[in-house]
Amino acid sequence: MPEEVSNSIQVFAGSASGELARVIGAELGLELGRVELGRFSDGEICVEIHDNVRGADVFVVQSTSSPGNDHLMELLLMLDALKRASARRVTAVIPYYGYARQDRKVAPRVPISAKLVADLIVTAGASRVMTMELHAGQIQGFFNVPVDNLYANPVLLPHIEKEIGDLPVAVVSPDAGGVERARAFAKRLDASLAIIDKRRTRANQVDEMRIIGDVADCAAVIVDDMIDTAGTMCKAADAIVEAGAKRVLACATHGVLSGPAMERISASALNVLLTTDTIAPTEQVSAEGRIRIVSVAGLIAEAIRRTHQEKSISSLFA
Image 1 (cartoon, one colour):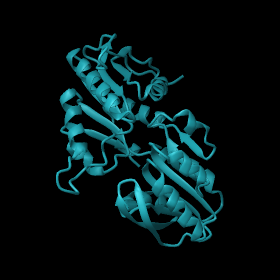
Image 2 (cartoon, one colour):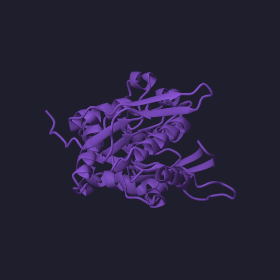
Image 3 (tube, one colour):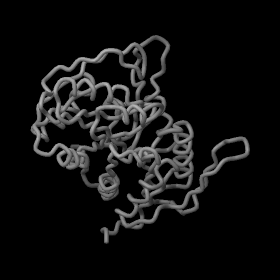
């Protein structure tokens, strides 16, 4: 039986993360709080909390995954309802933080959507935010409340080691921005490091790709924070095989897998794609033999337990 946690803690789930939240609750020895999520006849989202939360330490588990607008609105309304119900502290547990890709102005007249969403979450009533593998680390500074940005390394690394076997390992960053993440994996796997130089003409489309580093005769592990349409990942896998790699694995914390992603993965040189349940996998994803889903429920549950008990969670960051 899991260690019991004080009754003053309550965990609620949005519709995007119901199964993940259920497992988190089981890890904590708690039943999920009762919340009713519905719609008015015109499509507006309706939220009603059915448990007394006055004075409680409340955690709301909700990824802002597809459909992102609906799931974000659910989260905001739940936070507002809990704040108005006099919860002592409300922590937004957002395993996948959507709207993170526009985190700075890279062209005239574009929004910084990651900052806007952060403001909405804090204004709605979040006293604290817990998330996993932000697309850019500086997004933590967009919030005016404490942010715990967890990493999936502890749960992914054992599965990577199992898949690579006895082959020498090269960890590959799909772009220059992901080098720090790839270096962290390379250090723990005692692996060499390679970088892919890619040229984009527009979002979600890569036209040219070159490998900087040696991947010949290696098990190559492509590491990224998310895999969306899988264009970059699959082209990288093909280029790595052409460069002489014996086995190609992809590792991404957030399996967005939208648009043509599944068709591309099926036709690619990838042997295995490791991802987590920060985004609930669809039936098609679960049925794909190359995809392995690793749960982060235990990691998030431990972070919730330590937060509630006012203990350090810094050891969970790496």
